[in-house]
Amino acid sequence: MYKLLVASIISIMIVGCDVKPENELRVPASSGDFKGENYQEVIDDLQSAGFTNIEMDVLDDLITGWLTKDGEVEQVEIDGDSDFSKSTSYPKNVKIVITYHTFPSTETGEVPETTESSEETETPEAMEASGVSGGRNVSGFDTKTNQTITWCGIDFAFPYYYNVLDEGSTETWITYYPKEEDYYASILFQSQEFSGTEKDFQSQIPSIVDSTLDGDFFVTTEIQKSEEISIAGLPGWTITFSGSDTDGGGVITTGSYSFACNINTGKIVMITCIYDSNDQSQYDYLGDYKKVLETAKLSAEALDLNGVLYNIIQVDGGDLSGERKANVAVDIGFGEREYWAFTNEYGQLVYVTANIIIPQDDGSESVNADGRYYANEAKVPGTEHEDLDEGHVIADSLGGVSNAYNITPQDSTMNRYGDQAYMEKVIRDTGGCTDFEAIITCPDTQTQIPSHYHYTYTLNGNTITEDFDNVNPDTVNQSLAEGQPKPGTSDDDISSIDLNGNGKITIAEAKAAGYSMPIYSDHWLYKYMDDRDGDGMVGE
Image (tube, rainbow, N blue to C red):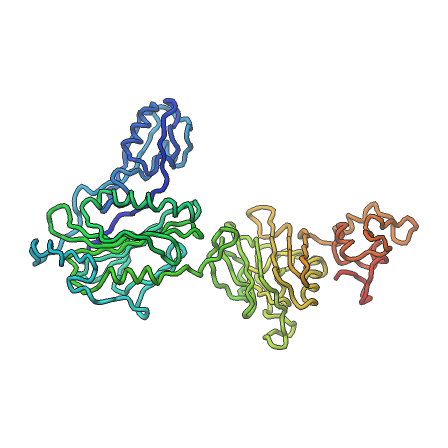
């Protein structure tokens, strides 16, 4: 069975600074400052500060030591806390645990028997620096059989012969290797957090490369290539190498290590291909690896909204489940429409956007007798209340679906006759709109019942803004009417509402004064407004 060639996390550490102790009871540096330093230096700093109870936790997980150096600190934990600030005070004898990386003291992997002599493996032919010498002329990279992985927002395809996923893989590193017993190769995908800009990353590439080449691993290797590359259009670097093991076994290791930064995901992506001279296949591992990099492309499985990536998931438009996933984007447009809804970390619907709103076309689209795409709407928590409707953010009549990512518990009067209904009617009667955005606010992180809606959209070149609370407009109007003169009396005063002084009140003027639509015939403002259809209400 294949024994893993690469079994350690190769991290690019871009942070780290010199720290000096302040006094014996204050931590001389933050947890982030300690990370990446040499453990002995951290011990010295802590002891100089006066701390006395310091323990070591050794991670003997290094194989190459490329960018994670021997003795490099993974974390420092003080009194069980691994996230502390500089100058935080602790008791002098508080327990401090320093976790650091180093090389295994013994070789645990089995080395298979080989009939090759040491003289044969030391020849330039055996070095296989080009990845083709030694008979490596077979490509396993085939679009029909390749495996795929989305890593750090990048889609990679890689050869089928990497058909075993290492059981030790984690969220930050994944290793695949061949199932065949006499194949000694692996491909490794790793990630590292990065909080800077693309310009920041590019400026640090030279120092990253220098520290990599100065590492212990490369002291005994021959660098075949070290050059700038692009992975999925992102700036990066690749290093190709080969070299003998240090224990005198005569095994030649050949490989290539590449990295790039995807600012959209805030990740540095690292890919490594490595194999050794025990491998009995004919595969051109490095040639295939080059194709892995060349065919990589940015993933379409996430949407960027204001610098934050949301995972795209597919939800049926008629799904009645009221549950939502956190931090996702869902297309809520019916048919070919593209309307996007976004949730926050609590699964609350917080944002909906559409470049263009296309009203329902019941002549060409499949709708039921009620003129709807679906017979019912998602049962979002809160809609069980008698006074709350399953309210669409983008109405069914405007091409919106009925799943939980387009439904909020909405006051029934407002949804049917109030501001929400009025906005939908205006957009529908105009034949649609552009640049539609909805910002939905909830009063806390526990409820799915919004407290406020903010809409902006463009009609005939004019930007319209709508703001309203999730309340019964009749109740609001009643409270506003308190203290106002009774309708029909000589004391009626509309001067503060009638902005153009023409003696009439428009819907816009009434709304600007704080009145919610519709205005009914028994309201004192009604006689000053234009009820064009004579149905006893204005602004429906």
